[in-house]
Length: 60
Image 1 (cartoon, rainbow, N blue to C red):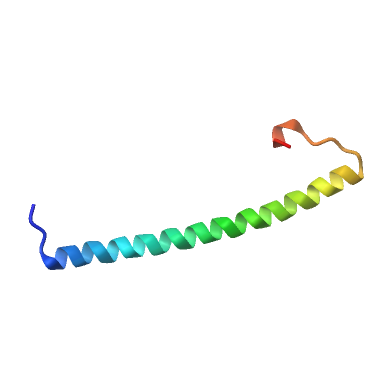
Image 2 (cartoon, one colour):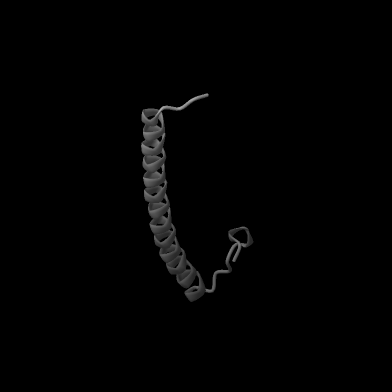
């Protein structure tokens, strides 16, 4: 299959947009993970303060 220069430029634009969207999604995932970690740490501290054992299924 022969690609014209226009076809290749379109493919490049699509690839660049896909990379941009993936980077944005990864950044959101990273921020969500850190927020979840903060909440988990708070919950862990509360459980310790009240001598409540961590459920094993949480992986702690």
